[in-house]
Image (cartoon, rainbow, N blue to C red; front, top):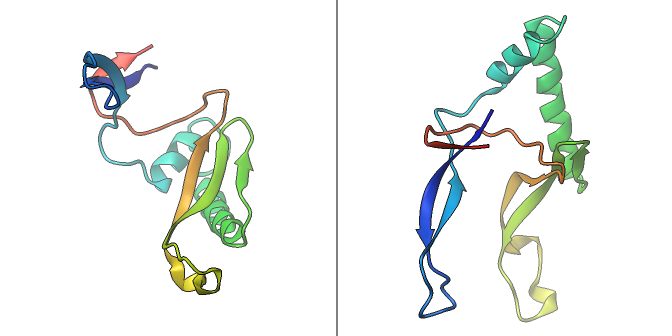
Length: 129
């Protein structure tokens, strides 16, 4: 299966005389897949029931959230590493740097596994590969 992309023209912003080049930009298609849609795909390749798979996935998400909030990252072999990220405000004085400076926490940040395993919803455009 190819990865959908569109062609985007960009110039190097660091160079005033930069020549425009075209770069593939990955795109998404359709609505996001929810947990039920993923469970159904898994059911098609498994002897487990849809309910069993949904239960496991729901418990997995809850456990992952708990682990992330405890300060650990989650490494799913051959897929990627998930970790929290935060939007924070800086202070000039170290004593003023408190938890109040954390304005938002995002769950999770996905870092792709180096082998390239990555599934993403797609928008219909061109196909890479």
